[in-house]
Image 1: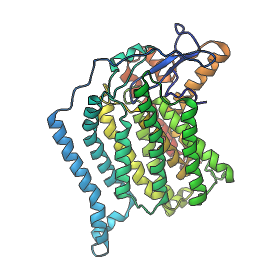
Image 2 (image 1 turned 180 degrees about the vertical axis):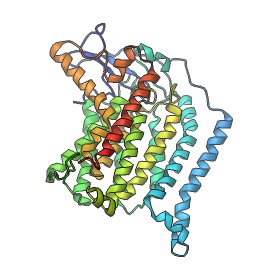
Image 3 (image 1 turned 45 degrees about the horizontal axis):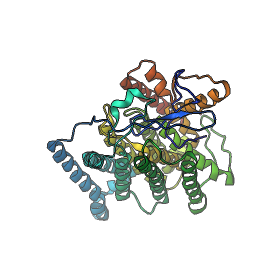
Image 4 (image 1 turned 45 degrees about the vertical axis):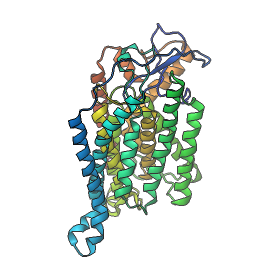
Length: 433
């Protein structure tokens, strides 16, 4: 289903021969692969780096972001320094609450991501780590050479801030961080192979899928065996429907992680397009994890109580904040792209959070943008194979609207609006049952 080893499948219009074209994107930049024939073989026309580069960060900006990094470090140390004094000073009791610590962790992650951004951009430019754009997406050729692998910024900021301010005795925190890092490692390998081989020739589809599935199964087995996780499902809009999947919960949970990771990967096609829905979905699951971890709220809303899930609010908030920091550099025109290291890790993180919050079936609602992007790619590919005709001008769906004349910023903004609506509908499932 996710074959091809690439981020998105761009099925072109009538001028393109073959079954379609696959488009592999770094964060916010389209990198189309060669046309794919009906038997799956692909030609690989290359495209070198363009001379265009985004402006270098100023010294004033570097000094400002350095101050933010210092602030983030101080905020991170605040919990470690002050919490032991809560027994003698009541004011420090506020550090016992996950919500307060999630705010501190978010500020720390935001400061770290803003501070690390210019450093990574400068280093990547010096090392010629930039995006290549294929001939099938000529409207994006001006983006060639933009620094990629910016997902490292998100992963580092998120994991570091989480480990500094979360309760490390909580297994959910470690599992969420491990899945994010594991999927990030797959994406990093893919990005590095593309840079080494050129022309977007990273991991193959089967290699990527097997690696994703292996990590997802290990995480699901850890939930099932180590954390003794409940295998009942919460069905949206149905109050008393809680099917028990028993051992089948392991492959189901793995499917959630793999599907979410690939859906985010496919959505990463325009500047800021994927990171916006990631933020809205993360905010939605910040609420879900907080409610699941609170006995009284879970009982009041009649949702599953998951002991220890409250610590995931810290992980969710750092995910939001680190993504906001990345968006500062990924907004149109992007100075940095996410790369597979970012898209796969973010998707995997959202998948494992949805599982641990016992809101797996709400994820397709909250992440509606990811669903329509992935669905458009699958429908385009198999419809063409059956009929030799295309439904969309190009897939994923954002390219369809782009080729229809919508400016890139209009496509991104409208998809963000759709994502906010989807998140609000997902939150409404707490009461509409």
